[in-house]
Structure formats: C-alpha cells, structure tokens
Image (cartoon, each protein chain N blue to C red):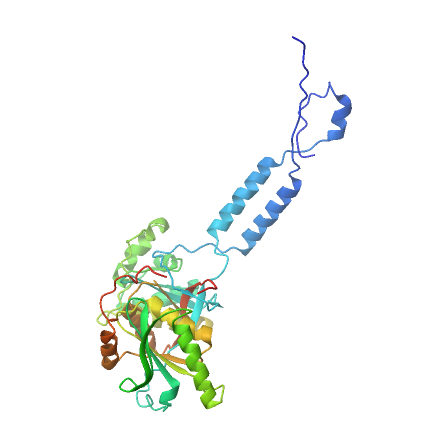
Length: 190
Length: 204
C-alpha cells in the first residue's frame, strides 16, 4: 500500500494488481518528525514556576513591632553558610529550645518544623494559631537557601512566616556555630 | 550454471498511520508553542515544590545574575510608554523608530545612556554574552528603581492593571544581592512578588 510499485509488471502480471498503487511515505514521515523535533526543542511547553512571596510593609515604621506574640510560638531560623542553618524557639537571648544547627530538607528543617508546629498546635488548640517562623538570612547565605526555607514552609503548611533582617546578636550566634565564615563547598550543591 | 531465479522480496511497512501520528503531534506542538524568549543572561533558578505558575501578562521580570541585573516587561505598548517616561526623567530623546525598536526588546541590561547603542544593534547581536553590563541599581544611580516605577505606571495607565513582578535569581547568588532588589521593590511599596523557581523532585 505504501510503496511505489517499481516492478515492470510484465513478469507477474497477476500479482501486481494485488499490490495496488501507493506513495512512499517514508520521506514525509522523516520530514514530519524532523519538524516535531524542531518544535519540541524551541518551545517552552510549560510556563516557569514561581513562588509567591509577600513581605511585611516597611513604610509604616510606627506600626511595626507592635504585634505581641508568645515566645513559645516563634521559631527563628538563621540561615548561614555551607547549606546549614541554626534554629531556636523564643528570643535570641534566652531561647526556649536550641540553638541547634541543622540542614535543609527532609531530615533537617522539615522535621524541626513539623515537630514544633504540632507542639504549638497541641498547646493552642486552635488551627489558626500555629507556629510563627521568622527567617533571618545572613549576608553569607545563598539565595537558594532562602528559597529552600520558604519551600519548607509550603511543604509543612506553616502559615505564618516572615523574612526579617538579621540582628548582630543572631550573627554572633552564627559565628559561634561557625556558619558565618567564607563559603566553601555550598556553591554548586543541590 | 543454472539460472537461479532470485525472488524479489520487498519488505515494506505501511507508513500511513505513522505519518498521521507524526503530523498530529506536529500540529499539537505548533499550536501549543510559544517561542522561547532569547535571554541575554541565562540563570539557574533554585528548585522548589511550589507549583504556582507565573502570570502571562502584566509581568515584569527582574533577572538577577552575578552582579548584573536585567529587566524586562511584557507588552509592547507598556514598553513604549515606559521608555517615554524614562526619557523624560533622564532628559534623553528617543526617536519614534528607536521607541518601536525598543518595544521589541524583551530583556535589557544596560545603562539608560547606552540604550541608544543597544537599540541600534541588530537583533542577533543584542544577546551576545557579556555585551550588556546590567542595569545600574546602586543608591547613587538607581535606574532599576526608575524602570520598575515607570513600568508600573505605564501598566496602570494603559491596562489599568497592577504590574506583577517576578524575581529570577541564580540559585548560587549571595543573599545581599537579592535583598537589594527586594529593598528596591519595597521602597515603592511593592510588597508582593514572585520568585521564579524550577520544579523539584518528589524525594527532596
């Protein structure tokens, strides 16, 4: 069906009738697949993904820092170098728990967030008043550390979190843990 | 030698169905495709599991690479109006031809004083690696701030919509660089924006 009948036709006259006339589509298929390949490679099938980020409004200086929240509900994350972070509950000067160094991902930050969130929820008995996470990226941390931390918020469904500027006290804490030095191995990882 | 009659054996496959499938796929790809935008500065975005899609229109993208910032807005009319406002601000004159040419540039990363030179370049050369040094964004000469502001004003004026802003940063950037961009946005009371990310695998 799909081939040109190239036989002279004289020898097997009877047979050639069965073959029928057809066009060789091989070249056409070749062309079609070539075009498919071209379009596949030059297109962006899906739109880029993104993460929505809302920052606290800065302009109203007077209204800032007015909301009082319980120490027991706040978890502070200090993002340091080498893909590590320090977390503690409550205030920097007298943390209720921690400070502890941990990594990102499944076995690090996520476990901490899930544990703390369930503890807080058990105490408040109110699904609206869960854990409050304060993310403080140090100047030595990398952008993907911040995105990883924000991603963990989305995974563990922590509703209240904010990115806040790091304080000198927090930097001291990072220094103590050795997470404020030069970047060594964290670039290119992940 | 005896004559041996070699039977002509023809192996042929019916290509019709294959051809049909190939063209069906081809038409699918042609219809769903949008041409990939040429980027003057490709960056490696960080991965995340969040799957919000970026909006299609009324979007400005700030591409942040190692020490360089590129800026781009969707919509030709918005770009044109944005350039008009910028030229007023910086006392620079652009001819209508230049404005038309500018409205076709998706991303740029040059000082406004070098913009004429960039517009004059042919399309293919504009995105050459290392050609564009980035939009100045320091406090003395904060052109990025003005571009964003003009883009937002232009979008409001033409489409009566709020401009969404996406930050597309390289994952190995130091945080202060991103912080600088976020600060510029917050100065204009733009507190809500998107961070462009890649898809992350399930087992993270």
